[in-house]
Length: 625
Image (tube, rainbow, N blue to C red; front, side, top):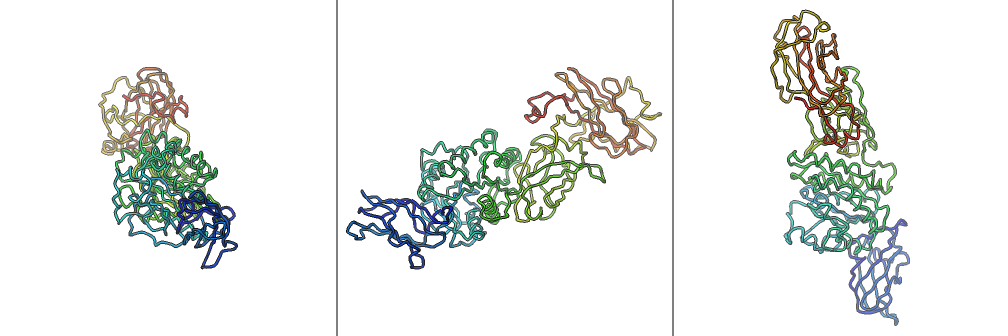
């Protein structure tokens, strides 16, 4: 008798909801007859399992079904072919078999396991793995040995090479996951290793199933069926290969297709899936937007795929430029176990991974600047950080961090409070990120060592269409001011020179103003904008002295009490701009030598939030000359 499917030495058989096995098996043989099973534990038959008929043998093959063996083990299972005469024609003994939960490990290299083996956890007799060479054994990192793979796809993907991997790498999240699951449930744990480093969603396409072991999906299904066609769930870590424009656009739909196909082919419409949100990577920030994009799409997967949990990893450390360290993989395995225990409801009181609940903007009672309040669901024992909390960013444009508006981050139970140097009006309409770009540094977890999810861009408030701040402008010298700013008339001629303030949004004349006596002086700023169509605009001013502004020679704004500090959008006035060129002139009094300068930018108010979210290519903005 030779087993080809369903029962193997050292394996874990998937339990049913009744906590017993229901395992289909098959193989080849020489004789025909009734297949019987005797199940032994510690050399004693288990319950009624002594010479129990479980199948038939005929035409040099046999098949059967072993049902009712309770969770636990290890068991010794003796299969026999009994002829009509009662004689035992053939016998096969399977040793060290467990009944418990079996999990598919799939995805790319961080599921395959490339962490340094110096951090490898010790094996556990109740944690087993179905290796790439179709053998079950006690799980030891490395779980995936691609060079031994039975399925051709794993050979093809490494260029036909069967060279063993480096001995110093091999730690993934699987063993840590299995150990933690056993610790919490006392249920034996089995894993079917199916991952392969560097692979894309296109390579995992279920449409390639018909290729069998020549495709990743087909190989996974073959291994699933070889082990009896029953699993408890799936652990998935993949996404690094999707960090470009084309792949990211198709990512969510491909994930939906993959999970629905697994659920169909595994015969489990409710198959639980714990997917890892990709971590950071030490590559050029030029591709950072795509890494953020995939993380955000992953964060949102539970909204469209039920019974799927996304486990963040953005805070974990690396052993090389892209692979989680061995110690980080061990932490990730525990997080995956926590998520799976919650998904499968095996432990009461557990929470799903931390998830964004809401974002609000409040005015700080002391400095009047914006506090951005971020609330999270599913926080276990409060938010914490090792050292100063970090990882958040606010930006005016999606995918472009131009200024560091956040000067402090406070943690309060399930809340993150971003202390900013901008006004509440400025904060409204900005985009919020946690873990922006390819290689962010994030260090906030809850009390169960579960990271906040990387996210962004997430709109803080109502979408607004802003131009950049004016950074190049025409200015005058400091001029005498004999009256208050309110009495200043629109000047008919001014001697002005263009000045470029570089990357500074604040048009800062502090050195010039600070060198004058406390007498009141005035400086004029002038710029022009061009509109390709009629537009409704708000002109946003920030200032620290008495100010007046003219639009097309007509006064539209004044604040004779203007003083420190200079805050963006401190003053706002509305204008209607026809197609063509328009001029704005601003007079700033020096405030007894205390003024520094102004902020200036424009907001288009007659475009919809939907248009703004689509991107600037879907609407026109004034062009600053």
